Amino acid sequence: MRIAIAVFCFFIAAGTATANTHDNFDRLPPPDFDAGLSAELQQFLNAYAAAYNRQDYDALLGMWDDEFPHPVYLAEEVDPPMLGWNRIRGYFNPKPGFTVLDGIRNTYTDVRANYLAEDIAIATYKLRFDIKVKRQKAMSSWDRVMAVFRRRDGQWKLAAYAEAPMAPLTMVRRMLQEQVPEDFSDYIKEQRDAARP
Image (cartoon, rainbow, N blue to C red; front, side, top):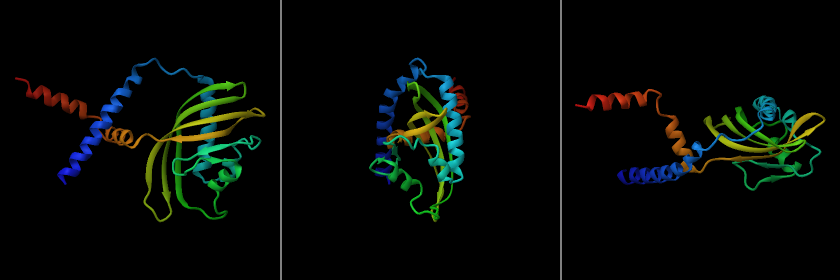
């Protein structure tokens, strides 16, 4: 058991050292993005989440640009990337009339978007999901997402979508940090003050 704990601590420490190097990005100027476009795509993603959460895959697929011949969908749980309409439709509805989920709740936040061309946009955002696969325990997690949107007839449509989960060590570190109670900093300060002569 001691060896297992030591190995776990080693990997967390190694991940922390690497992650701390990248944390310097937090000190850079704020990201440059189009606030108006980001708000438009946030509205789109709110509607997309609503369709996803009620498992209305016809509505969901209707929010993709079916006139674009080369759609891409990169889900974290599927390898290789899904290229083309047949694979994407099969992903959302592998067995028509049969559901594999008891329920799902997707939430999209932190949309940061810019135009690639007049009617083409690229965005990054955060996906938070709670999911219950039939005959399995419910799970929750999050992903970083990058997507490409095309505006057609005045409406945004998806053309490409990629989930980009963090590296395991980085994700474990983030999960451990998010579990820290809000009062822990005050507790540490109180302990230090009490220890002073």
